[in-house]
Length: 341
Image (cartoon, rainbow, N blue to C red; front, side, top):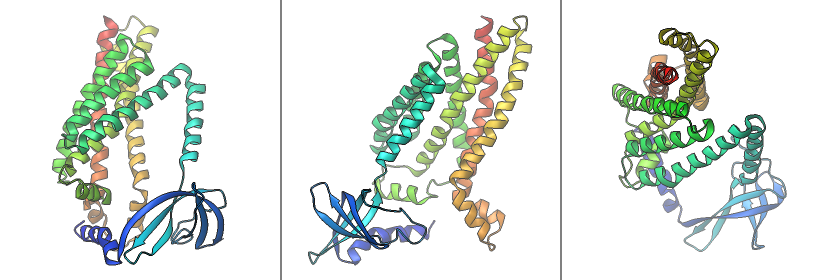
C-alpha cells in the first residue's frame, strides 16, 4: 500500500508533466471504425471527431465497436492550443435499461404482488442511499451512525412493503434491528483485531485523498460490512418467522420448546447455506486477486492472507456471517413469542 500512494499521486499529476491544460468528455455516436486504433464519431451537434482507441484492442480490452454505437470521447487540451481525442468508454445505459426491464418482468411474473412491491422497495433503497446516506457521509457526518439509521429505515420500509403490514412482519423487523446491532459489534471487534486501516484498495485511497479529510477510511470499511449484511438479515428474519408460523399451524399442539427446536433445525440449514453463499460472493468479487496469488509461486499462503486487502475480505465475510448466525435463534424466539400470544 505504501508503494501504491506515490503511484496514484503521479497519475493525478501526470497531465501537468505532459503540458495538458484540461480534459473534457462528450457523448458521440460512432460513424465509422477506421481500423483497430481509430474511429470517427459524431456528437449530438453534428461535429465529427477522429478518436484514438488507445487500448481497446489490446491488453484484454475489446469493445467490438461498430457504426451506430454510442460512446464517450475524452478531449485533452494542451497548453499550445492543440488537442488530442481519445475513446473513453462505451455508453451502456441502453443495455442497463433493458437488463432492468427483464429483471422487473421476471420479478413481477414470478413474484406477482410481492415482486412488484419488492421493486418499489428497491427504488426506496436507492433513494435513501443516494438521496440521504451518501450525501451525509460526504458532508462529514459519522458514516456508521448514518448507515445504521439508513439501514433501519430501509429494512422497515422494504420488509413491510414486501411481506405486508402485519404483526409478524414487525416482529421480523425487530429481529433484523437486533441483528444489525450484532453486525456493528462484530465489525468493530474484528476490524480492531485484524488491525485494518480501511485503505487496502485503490478506491479507498482515492476517496480518502479527494475528500479533504471528511472521510474516515476505517468508518467507510465498517459501513461496507454493515450494508453487505443488511439484505441477508432480512432474509434470515423473515424465513425464521414464516418457518415458526408454518410449523405451528401444521401442529398447534407443539409447546414453545419443541417449536423452537424444529424451527432451529430449519434455521441451521439456512445458516450453512448463507455462510457458503457469502463466502462465494466475496470470492467472486476478489477472483482476480486470488488468481494473481495462484500464479505467483514466490508468495506463501500465510503472507498472502496477511495482506490487508485479503484480510479485509475475510473479516468482511466473518463479521457479517457471525451476526447472521446469532440472528437465527433471536428471530426464531421472537416469532415463537408472537405465535403463542
